Each structure stands twice: as structure tokens, then as C-alpha cells.
Image (cartoon, rainbow, N blue to C red):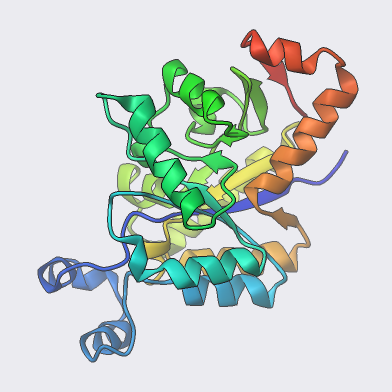
Length: 272
């Protein structure tokens, strides 16, 4: 049996916050990081550089899901273009609207393409997931969606749904430190290790990890760097979303010649 493949991904919900926001959450940050932020040496919420440096050191690349409309992309455009050029994947992190949904999704996707990004996958803000959204993504030429938690999907490995590859999220930082309220980093680390081992002992071969880039200097979010070192030490296969998606599509097409027709009819296909 092939070893578990761990997929690295990041959502970008913000790249800066006002002073009042930071002061209200100051206990989440190390004192030295707060000082550097106040001295304008670094930005606590713009962590692309430390993220990329840590991944680059280990030979890893990740997928970065970028929104249109949450903040001006002008602030990070050069950084994102440089990262894509160096092998990171840029995905679309749409803010889903209940009105003119398709049109606004297309507006944002077209803008990312206008900026020069080669977008093949999406992960909706707040992980919104509906059949009608999948139809919109398929019409827009998107290859995959990664908005569904593994707990909801009932599996961790990718599968085909409505003509798209669905890449379930196995672990999200906001779930561990927000919904589960595991504030102690040592306890959070034990939980992460437990979940990783649970999946590895199963027949699942893919485990998607999501850490928000703006949280990487926060208590909890800092565990991402420890996780990278652990994955490297244990010699896991580590990759970005599109690599797993393209491999899965090749496998399904080889197994089933009628794959494209089946996708058009919206039937679910299993991918191992």
C-alpha cells in the first residue's frame, strides 16, 4: 500500500489588521513578534515569506487560495506572482454571494486570470459547499474544489462530484483552535498527530492540511512549521493540491474510458 500523501494548503482571509484588532488578540502572539510589528519591521498578518521559506527549505510547495474582494490584491500581487513562478499554486478563494452567484464567481475568477494567475481550483470562503456552486465551478472550467471537510464527505481521499474533483479537507487550523477550542499548543499537537495516524492506519491515501497564512505567527498557527519538520523527518510524500488532483484524474481516466460522460451526468466516481 502506498504511503499517505499530505497536501499543503493555505487560505488567505487577510494580510493586515488595525491596531485595535491586534491589541485585542495580543496574547496569541509572541512578544518579539508584536514588537517587530509595532516597529513596522514585519507584518503579523502577512506571512507569505516565512511560509514559503519554511516550505522551500524542505523542498515543499503548497496551494494558496486567494480571495477577490476581501482586501486589495495590490498589496500582495508581486509576492503571489513570484510564488507562482517558483512553483506554488494559486487557487481561488471566492466569497460566495446569494445574488448573481455565477456572475460574481466569474468576475473574481476572470480578475485573477487577468492578473496572470493560472487558477485550476477553488476553496470557498467559510467553506460554503452546495450542488449549485459545483455546477458554477464546472461551467467556469474549474478542475477541483476543496471546500468540503472530510467529516462531511465521509472520506479523506479525492472523489469526483458533478464533473469536479472534490479534495476533502482533513485538518484545518480554525477547527482545531476555534471550533474545538484547543488553546494549549501541546494538546493541539497531540490531536494533530492522532488525526494523522488515524488516517494513515485507514485505507485513505490523501490528507489535506489547511493553515491560514495570516495565522502562522499566532499561537496554534505556529504549529504549521513544526508539522512541516515532522512530515520531512518521517519522509511523507508532500505536495500541493493540483498534483493530487491531476494524479487522481489520470487514474480514473485509465480505469474508466467513459469518465468524461459520467462526469457530465454528475455521477460520483471514487478515486483511490
